[in-house]
Image (cartoon, rainbow, N blue to C red; front, top):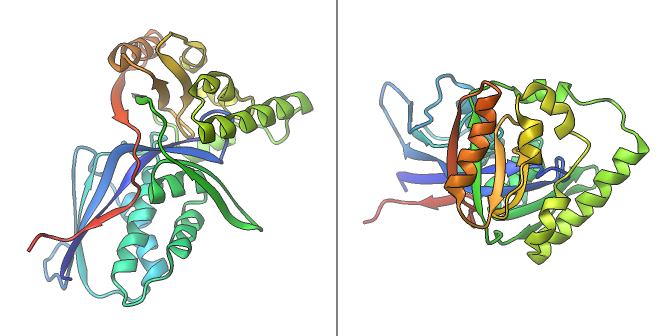
Length: 297
């Protein structure tokens, strides 16, 4: 095999109360065409509508490759990216998933799928985003001293509307907004809704999601750095199933039954009233995570 292509989807993590535990894969992909034995002067070429302007994403992919194939053969990569970078849509998780998938194809005896998934989760640090990129669908996951544990469900029967404001909010900065301790009332509130969120996702009870995404652990604090977020989280409409911050933000995710264009425009208008331009993406939920293919013939 002298050439192959791998791809991984975007993801939206947390879904409110599922902080660092729940994610959905989105049908918006990052792909890499890998050619072995390359002798070109440029081993990496960036392309796609979200081509990276710096090597941070390449670093994620290279760390993923090195985790599985520490001494790979010479190769070249053509990276094609459609996932907004630094927007709370799992671009780093997709990069790590691509790297691990590439590494597995560069060695004669790759590790098991479970070992590869663990590698992605440990590299990413967030098992929800990592496993959504690796497996697709809906993920509920934990990572810690008891290892990597997860449940994987088929996508919900909804559409995703992602509204990406013109705002830079690095994940580290978004983390720094969170308090060191929480009250008992806020903790109980979020535990109840996290449990409800897992049950709703497992059973397909989308009517429970509006209540299940209402957390008190991270969204209220991050709203201070994202103009309009409080109003957006309170936005309601008969077509809307749930509205949450996507990952650490600043993007917002709305799950809708129908009329995604109208809902996206309404959320974008809220950002506009607070002085932010935004881009609206209407996406399907992704049933597949990492995929691989080789040229025909």
